[in-house]
Length: 100
Image (cartoon, rainbow, N blue to C red; front, side):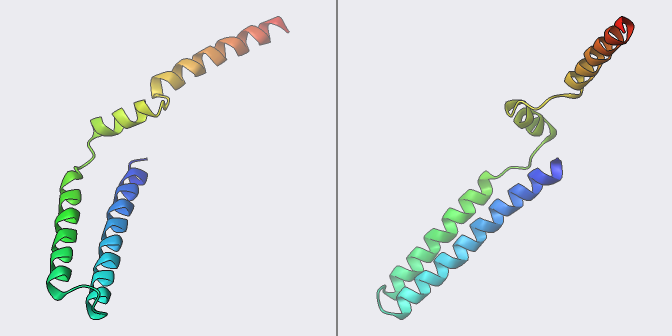
């Protein structure tokens, strides 16, 4: 489960990097076509770098407590929940078996 979350975070970072590359290429193309001045292109590129850096800095490592909190918010069952269900099921099976 942790690997899935790790892969999800890495995919998000990868898509951000890909978006930055595409945006930089677009700026370069616009400068080459004369639709932007070189200074405007540099300014846009710097703004893209700052925005990407800010987003990367916002991402913090996922701790065990964070993962537990996420799973609780998603209403996943805990080991205790599953043990309780298993005990209840065993009790019901015993009652059914004793009846027949």
